[in-house]
Length: 437
Image 1 (cartoon, rainbow, N blue to C red):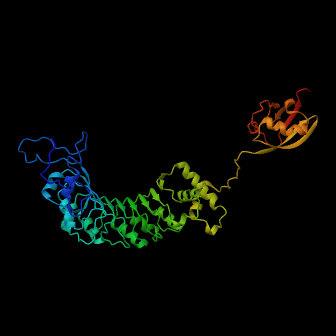
Image 2: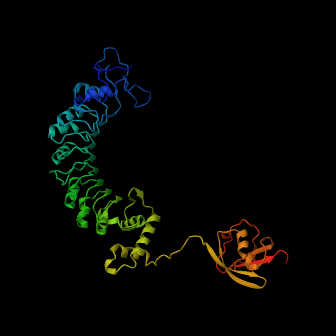
Image 3: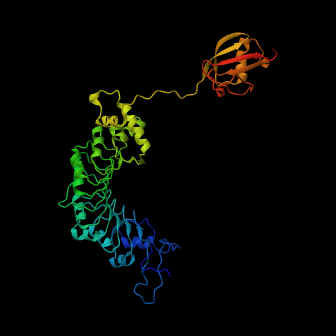
């Protein structure tokens, strides 16, 4: 049985002008015409059969994840209908709408009792004051996205006070230049995305540690933090539980800042792409020098650091600084010398295949040193030697003798065989005999 509230669907298209309610958009998007019932869990709109006259006969079981982004929503609509439709909804995406009043948001959220994830990104809520009574309707939310909402720190503080179970908070693209600390810290938050803002001074970043002492993951990408100006012992106290940090495209310019990451006692994962410090180095140098400096980090820039890679990187680090003046050698160098000892620079080995060789050509009790190309064939070698040995190629027998091999000469009897396949090297010998001899 599929049923619906008696709502006017004369305007069913999703590209309606602004001024539509949450309920209007919900009914349009999930109407039987636009979102037909399909078999399978979580698919479509299904109304179970109920006894005739049941007050719940018109209630719809919508998907538990509702995506209503970019729909021109400005207000909540009938709260009774929201409560009837959305009692079991756990995730709600309202991003890129036209909600500008927190009271309207509260009307929606207060009637979605199971809500754990809420996305309000790119709604013009910055001019509306979020009162604590409104924020209280968010109390069950665990993941909140306020990207590009230009939410003030006062609004954020109110949310933190009223969301005791908030675990993940997204505050990207909000033009923050400073961080404002609330009077009470938030112990529940584990993940903070605050990318693409205008945070530059470490004095602002350290406030995040004060605000969120249980923080596990801090994503600071695309800010302009230019240095980690904090003593090592203070970093450990500020971020005692930090496991992952992203400083992608930050302004870090000093190896001392990279070394300070070792002060976070639980840090395992780091992202450091696109920072000024690493620009002069090759791709290989960037990764190996960073891996060697961060012995506790098990994942760098999204890639796992294996035990083998770590040892290679630490040995590379020693050799990289072996000729650097002692006053410029980093402390990590001395730690690794204790671990591996002093290492000699790796010998430069040319692995390119040899293209030519100087060999002794023996014929008629004569010996001539001849330079031969190793990319040519036996037939081509015969033509090269034709003038020297005064024999036609058809009458020529060639034998190759490796002066280091324990075996005797090898007949070069296949005309199309390439010379490099014999392994010819400088100093080897080629004997020429006449077939008629």
